[in-house]
Image (tube, rainbow, N blue to C red; front, side, top):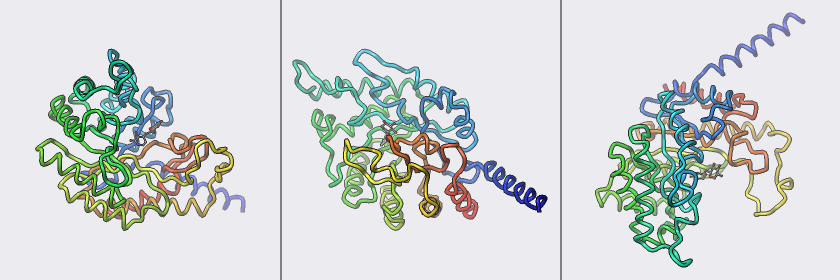
Length: 357
Ligand code: XIL
């Protein structure tokens, strides 16, 4: 009996080791890269287990925060590139596709950018000059190293109209076109993307498609639409994901899933006691684990079905411990658990990719 139990244990160990040995990057359809957004501990190398996993599993990286406006240009006369340089170096050393995220957004951008003289908002010319200087400096610095840039992030509102961001208010509707123009001038070889979320919602998707067509009509370079893919277990449905993909690809552009994660927690009101809305504080129940596994299998099923349209899939964080979706609670949105062990969802993704080969 004891021998049998030992043998069974050995087999389980061997199986686990075999799963750990599989690399997602080796299983992806041709022409589709697989990546992860990395944080400072990872590109600095202090998270050694994380670095090993990233190096083994992925052939593309995105910067979770390091290349945003605020961290790269905290003041008008000051650029800070220490972290960004290490991020880019991390990818270059490993021959990964290095993505830039992002140049123009309403968030994580210093208040100074939008301020004019005497407490008034900055005018159009001032804002355009600041935008051009930022884009030239940041994109120019990584010319030839960064494969593609999210030029404008989240410019469309839920109803499909152009978001009244401080960029839009100060410059006017052509601020998006200007950003793409400046980015192309700064690195003519870099791919340029428009990136947004909730693209499975028809009104918002229609707004994004209209925006993209306007850029195309102006003969500006745009290579792809980034669909952030911050999804949940049941929403959007697989049919909605599939339909949105087909419509977005109808613009003639590549489609990328740029910030994939599956949020298992409900939204809570701001300021609410996190403890009251933390149902999985002591672990994830088996049935929810299974739902997450099936969900990942289904979404990867869509990606491989449309392998001609999809050029990239990027997870927004490596393991559950790294995810921005925790925010004081316990969330389980990714393929590796807090001990950096592959979850059943990882195995399910491997199975889907293998059977598509
Ligand atoms: C998030 C980061 O993950 C967090 O660490 C940060 O505090 C806020 O931004 N859409 C985007 C990303 O385009 O840049 C955001 O990243 C998540 C939503």
